[in-house]
Length: 380
Ligand SMILES: *Cc1c(COP(=O)(O)O)cnc(C)c1O
Image 1: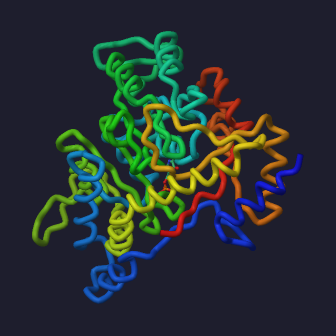
Image 2: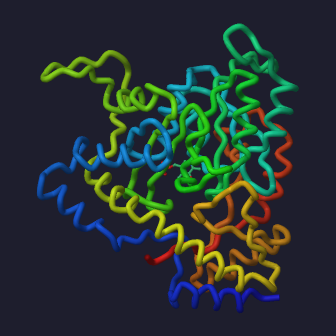
Image 3: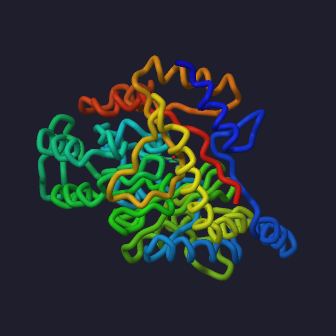
């Protein structure tokens, strides 16, 4: 059976006859005004009122104590991991089914990822796989959890909330508490999602968000580190601001810091976008309803929202019957100008991560062969 009818309906739904992008941003609020303001005041660079405002608002929105705005989501993860105690020669447990930045942030800290499986319904880290891995491979010593097969310290665990679906984060945190492993949430895709009523990014020791152009709201490029624990987001701000000791004129830097700040220009865009996040989420909820009509009688199944997730509806996913169907769907949609993309290839297969420890990754492989994202933009 051809996907012709579905493709026609997707085009109609998005009212884009020539090309339907996967996820385009929408700037119909205060974006222009705030950007113009940064130019008028000349505060376009690394300090400014919009940076301060955005940091306050992200913390409030996610119910965390404090946020540090940074240059992108990848460096947000990198810094959060460093603050969680990830150092050279340590390991970080994460999922194989995620965007490459998750593992790269681990490698930038000179640590190694350990790849474990996801659940089929959430597409995020499986608490059962995590628990099994730790029971089989690790031991608690005085200063924390060690991997018996490699002899390395397991310094952190970094689950990811795929497409804004929440993984079973409460169970993951409980398992990690038992094994004294710090949790850093890769919440890059999950701003605005909640799990059992609690915000993505607020469960772990720290959480990281991305405001890249394709995310639910964008600052052009940008990210944030949030923490519910006192002092950590402040430390993130310090490290990402070249670890400069406050002084009216002297340049004193007392540890190895980074220039990972979010410019005020980007923060201006971010503030305007955050004002409209609930509107964007609502429009996406309506879009999902429309997709439910389109996909009802087909072999293209919408991925159901897991029970405990209040979803931000960031990127809508469908599940095809098997790999050949997935490939045919990708071919036909993209040929017709409807942009679709497969879920990521497992990171455990990439050249730089092929020697990293992993479990059987059964569900990850199953999803890798079936999941495709469909156009999820809204115009609000
Ligand atoms: C987008 C994304 C990132 C990285 O964010 P950037 O802002 O692009 O650096 C990290 N992890 C996941 C899961 C993402 O989707």
